[in-house]
Length: 434
Image (cartoon, rainbow, N blue to C red; front, side, top):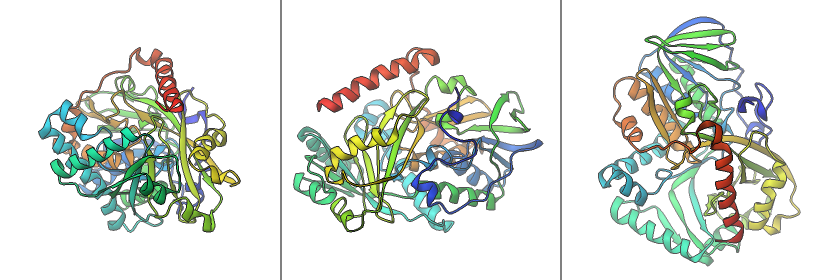
């Protein structure tokens, strides 16, 4: 079964609040016939669109192929959080990459956040308002101590002074829930409307000269000095291929699939909360907690609670309202009478060590994927780094690619059942409060 078609109607966005409030992008034509390009990009999410924009601005001839609609995948379905740092923290990175490279990786992540904000402003993206602030809510006292110590480290070693520690009273005052022991607010992070950001990137890329095609699922790539990327109704002969399909890559490139695993995650949107919204979030910040299967939420512009939680590891989505309502009501039992107006799922991609997988599959085939839930900023930056690497300015890309990226045990055949076993164990730990 192909994840591109397992849970969605062909060429349609899921029934999300994002789709309901998107600034429309007229459908783009499917690829027809044989065309040539300097670069062919597979995937119309943040990575591919950012790459298309930055390549086109360099004057290259770019063709982007999207199987469904622009922003159809995780880029148009996620929690919208523009987080700080890499997916792993600086302590982990210092151990794995050394202190010098850890600082470079921190700087790249800072650049990623700045890039998102700059693109929104530079291209006057309709329907995209950057809201500052992400709170991190801790379930245990030990996690609170660890979070506060890490904030001190970032201030001391990296000069980052945007983290505001919160005790139990502070976190409760901010997020209106009594289940957390404390946490912090990152004033240097923020959140956006993710689908409108993807559509804004598409409009900017098109304006710069990139050719974008929807309804153009890639069926095969003939590799060689001039690769040929094939769809059901056409082909692109190019100098360089960029793989930017993330969790929807399927079997197009086994070398990437061995290191990048698709998983499903889910979000609901309540009815507008009106005056009750201030009892959920006292400020317009986003929130993520410390569970292994993370709960994350924020208020929409019309004061709906957008709450994400729960994961699945097969192809078919479960009952989304039931799956997400359970953790939502654990955090906010006062919302048990609130109607759910939208419920949707999506497929993202994780890696074994949760760091993105940047790789040169072949000298003229580059790939970036596996953002592990930290992709709004990093995937946007990845597109820029891919564009630079295509133009032989690969310092940033090579730094990301230098990080060890192990294969999932069992290969493509056994990674699913082994992942389910591991995730079930960690989910059980969450439920038991361990």
